[in-house]
Image (cartoon, one colour):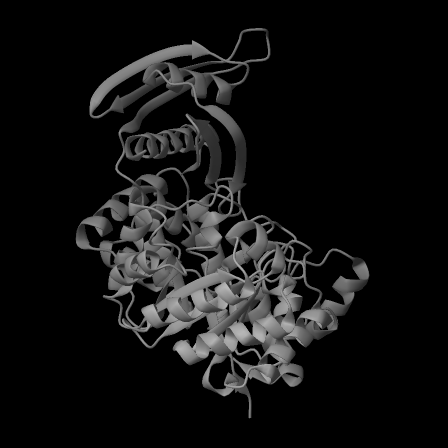
Length: 506
């Protein structure tokens, strides 16, 4: 009989700390709903003490999620723990997740505490959290560079104080699989009360070993894995949820581990995250990349034609890569669009559905067929976004190869007031960005520009992402349209709206 592994997703917390992966509150709530639909057991909604915005987002997620446990992260300090509980207390299944560093380098230089003081702080923090809930997780930060016997003492102390989950993180991605597995096994075996808690691991990917270390820990007895969608997170990221799940599923004969995750939702979830943060899924990304099930070699193609198992160890359908699309067009009614948005996991209110309905009609006038990915792009573009201070009304671009500089004429609204301007640029996109910048009287730095086709075909929508920096703030904007230049203008304005909100909050 297979053992049960609990999946703890921290995309909303550790994942959002990935450069360029900032999400607004509506986007976090949308992703939280998708994570619940995916079947994760626990989602870490954020770090409530970090900012008022983070606190509000965590509280809203806690109030929204119905079945999945909602965790908030907090330092081993009474004030942090109180703040965490205030944010998650309305959840159906709240969890306080507190942490304290245990490695010599962290204790000496960051905490400036002795090992004995760290044990005392661990005991005090967990006991304080236990005043609120019995669902407490304690993490020994930088565990992979800690003394193994000291880790066992910390775990024993935390469990005695009331912790029900003990997390052993490879915080800086330092561990090697065999070594990490041995360490987890040692801690479990040398913690006298280990039977009273579930042991967890949280592995970073600095050396590309996040999933490998997680699997080694599972073999050693860990029964909770902390992961993120597409492996996003600090620095090189975390162990990727989709890679871990498919390793366990594909090699069930080896691991004998079951999870509650619906693998068919993996690709849709990764795709949603990609659209929210404006970062395309790399083509060579395991499980969900465009090339994951592509075969170019003649020998491979011949084998696939004879038997798919020759070169595929899993099917595209098993991760949600292929399904029959209900193609929408300009003759589709509200009920068809409502059915499609519900099928895609977007429970829209009537006013939101009307927005999508009208946007689909406009898009259908420009392209013959509207696919699922187009619908998702419309929802994220028109519904799940912050209110616009800046809005594009009309755009006209002139460009040639006869020596006349490209120019752009832009008509837009600023808080409902119509403004228009024309200027030149080194290219059509540059002309658009310069024109918008001159209209709004701002000059943000463009750090990144990328274009991705949402669907296949010559009439596919273009999805543009830009990264702008201004006054010490940096954010990603996205826009979609069959016209790449229009999509670029929408992405630039989306980023300006985000920067404006950051400046007002800062």
